[in-house]
Length: 161
Image (cartoon, rainbow, N blue to C red; front, top):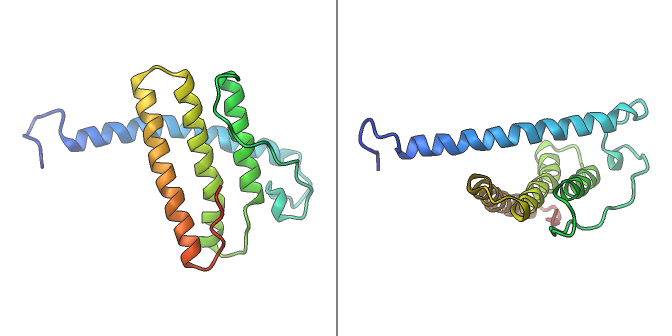
């Protein structure tokens, strides 16, 4: 399956290009999530970890379910996706087991990526971005299923994000 030497379209180069493109999109999103989390924690009481459901602090009301629709501008959809994701991560059940807690937090995080990708599909006609968004949806949904199966195999509720 190796391409001929010098072929600029070898499977390895194509894969590397896709990975680099994904990194260019994911890195700014990760930075935005981190900045958002840091802003949430900045005004938190001492000892508050930013995850209201885990420290006995009052949580904001549950946001409505995310709905990708052109009835809202793109920025509004991204805000909605972030609010749903933040709430889900704050409410994720934690038990002190690293594997369980990781999966519990990643479920709403991955669903947030799916929601954001669905939003951009409504507003972007750029083939690269649309392809990236479709790939994110497919991969993140697959990983959500893997994590739900892991929870089930280990005797935990496998709730949907």
